[in-house]
Image (cartoon, rainbow, N blue to C red; front, side):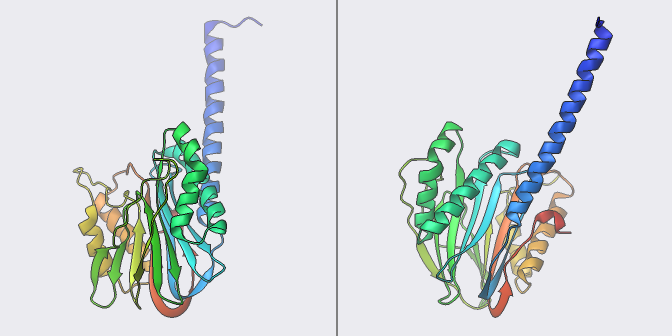
Length: 280
């Protein structure tokens, strides 16, 4: 059938509209998948409580956190930040999650886990010219020991219940996953005490900006954590998000915002995994 220029353009417009609808539908599906993975089944343990949340800068993001219960009673915690944003970062986040789950089953410690993850996904990350920063820790409720290794991620903050002080966990070096092949990640340990809180986070928190382009920065985060240190992990999580939102004054953020909070106590509690859109 003959098509003049108007009918031809109209047909193209229809095709583009249909493509837009398809893309939106698939992006929403990808977001639902990612949300489901972040809100997966979580274990229970005695000696504290832990919670995680993630708010993507776009519909889907590249930040990642996870909890994995070990047969010896420890809880393995990981938080990470994939280079990039949006769909490409989300795809690499899924790759990272698979590598973590596989490594957690077959390794004895956080350092071994990061070593195995780098070994598993290094070639893929190099092909895609990407990398992932990761912080992996084993919490032992029986001994109160937190053992951890770092792959280029910012160190978590320790809020001490005894004297209400905040400091970074002792640093341990390690290159980002995907940075170099055949890396061996070292680890160290710290003794935690009753009412201590460990705050794991990605840099989207401290780099959140307001209308003047000013960053939220570490000192505001520290003040918020100290002011709310007696709260439960869920309440503390919400307080941090409220503080960021108040500071940003509605400005859209360019980076994902993700946190994991481990609070030590003598009570038996559930691990809860909250997705940030429900934080209000």
